Length: 534
Image (cartoon, rainbow, N blue to C red; front, side, top):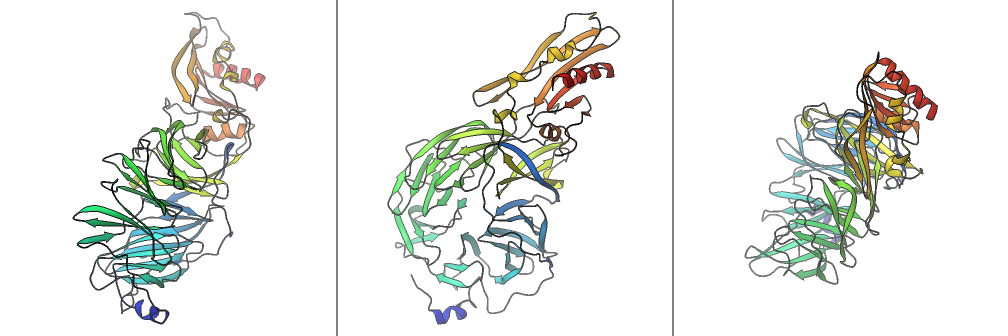
């Protein structure tokens, strides 16, 4: 592999697809730079406990992508980028080029990288904390980019420039160029990993259209760290990189292989990965077998040992996010649409121990699709789209940051065992009046399953009470803290949790939410009974 001499760095930066002899043309920008927030913010998410909303903001954006790194929360759209303080939700900076589109973006090592399209293509680097412009370059044709930690990897498909080169993401300076020697009549390419911690660049060598071997390159120097012949993977569809190793999955054969300095090891477990979206948690790579659908199991591979296992999840999941140690899954169990109970849940997974716990999110009225943004400072940041919007293209999002506080068990049920919930029959019996029809009854309409716990969902009813009419009562949810029930009812935490509330047929008294169908006198009777017991 050829290497650059120090005295030639400046000259070589002026050639090639990443930096042409003529500087990039000036373009109009809408650019606001902010002040740096807290430094040294950890990327930890919340521990097991009762979740509470620390801050929330409304964001108007079409099809946004959210990423969190350190203390920065960055929102990307095709129109531009916005930076927020991940600890407070305050918007700090923004950048856009009016009339031009962003068609590639990354957040890595404290730098936001944007590739914008217009009359010519540009590559722009911004400081993720302040939005300050770090550098900008013209991009030549037939050029692709990827990132490996603090290194920007350029792959060029023109004879005039080196096929592969690495650049410092913060300065834009070239660090190395060239790639490893490959066999006769063979080609190499650097496939973009689905997830990476930046510890190695994976190079695929193909001969006669077939993947012959894989190489692992040092991002800082471009040197080859390991090479392995490929006798295991037919088509490398999903590539994950962590701790200097690559986990590569072949959806056709269902095989998963770990390539590292020491060996290439095929998993003995059946770890299906069809359109999966892997995440990294320490030395583990995990994924749901198929993204976009509810999954009850998760595959986990240890990149250090190559060991693999399948972890059962407390509730079916549709996506995962990592804080570097733990994994957080999102689920939305089937409900009857009446409200008053959690509609969104977080499953906290320990990939090393293979354990998982489900925690309810106490804020759901009118919310629809939920998306993870990331984790920072002991908070899990989620983006929730109002369900009444016709489509995601038209929608805005509410960003909410959840932390956790130690709470009573069972955490899955907001700290109150369902066996201790008020009985709907006793609440119904508090409604005075002679039953002119059949005796009071109970009907089950479903059940909520969390791990091995099953809770029957039911309501109690009375037909034709004298001077009252028909009445029905259902206990929707009970929380240890009244403020959690308050958030479930109106979606706004911290508003007079000690006061009774009503939202249509839903009532909250303390931490108890019930649904009452009937005239005002029936409602008053149920509230009175609840006040005497709460």
